[in-house]
Length: 474
Image (cartoon, rainbow, N blue to C red; front, top):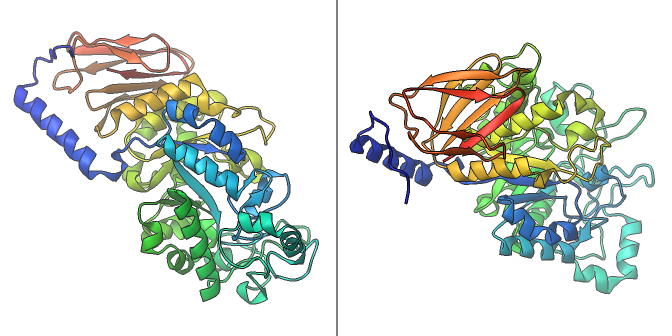
């Protein structure tokens, strides 16, 4: 039996209207689903499978897994250099392991999102001069163990290369990363004479091979595609591969790294056109930049009241939200975007508390050496955030109080989030008249602090301890 609502100004009719609005939100808003994503970065497929039940119990609804195709080398970045789409084979697993993992996660009701590369193939100029993929050495391995490789084949004839020189663009390195033509048609190079990652043309053969690859992953049971390096692909290429039948029932999101939102050169030239020319979602780099600014010395939490209203966050239905991606700690050029560990935790509370976007948790095997994100997926505070997030989906959001140090907002009548970034307690007083929040009902912090909110009068003061978050759930 639920507690009797005591709000003095809410009539039965107003409560009915709120209920109907909530039902409408659930039925009509795509982002209203509970949708927490785990990025199991560089995990072996067998390890993801072994943790399927644990991932489910933690509240995740999807797992983004390592790229599934033929690649070689132990380094994490080697997974982002494909040799062959036609088999899954690399140090993290093969086609059989991938199938088994997808089956185990789907049995738990957890979706699998595949990390896919369509912009380029592996940089192998150091060992051969041709552009035949997968190349003579790999074909030799196939022919030396035909039973095994045919057993893990997704499609095609492994007796032959599937790409040749005519399937690649010119061998030129991007010199100006603000030039749209160069970024989308030339090669990503490492400098020092590196000839770069061979850039694929969007000819009919390449498109057909990429389409067949995605169809095979979908047939295995994959429910979404992360498009790596989408910033470097012409929209005509993306849209030619990702046809309506391939995208049907799938969550597709692209990686378009930008320094900020509207008004930022990268946003205006790359991310905004991507959103206009596709119907895919994207990493919300504008919001991550906004978070870093809000939590910085001199920044204000008021900047998080409604950043989408002025182009500093993506609209909820198109946004995959995050505090950290795999590139940020693992590539020196992106480490500027790392947040202080406590700020990162508080930022997660904001992302899992707010309305809009699919929030993603990054969990690695300490590839960067920071030792910050190993087993992050099962931290008690993260699981508490996911529990709050899953419970309040489909409800509206209203900011109740904000300032330099803090923000307090509600999610429908079910939950309240309070965040204080500063070094001393903030007491935020809020007028509860006309509030949809319940009076004389316990809202308990899902983050395990033991804090309880129980509103008993028209002016309630939320006490927010220094450098902390509270996610109170009714």
